[in-house]
Length: 129
Image (cartoon, rainbow, N blue to C red):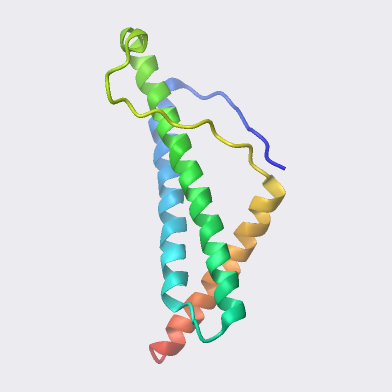
């Protein structure tokens, strides 16, 4: 089940929150990259599990990036309300944010942490550490 969470912050806090969200995306992408570099196609079951996990995490990152774009557009509109009446040609339109299943997200986070640890151990082993 997905849910939408909303809360209110001061307008001047929006860029700071967006920076935090982008850092979160970057962290997830770095973890995904580490995992992707150690996937072993000689173990089909783990390979399939890891690929599925990576695809789900990429979807989460894409969703969060979409939300960042929507929030920045709203921030920009709030700063320049005159531009809201006639948006510039070529302005990106972002799809609406899907609801978030918090339990599933927490489960994926635990799975990501476990896989990240496993990837780090595998990397350490392959580097002789």
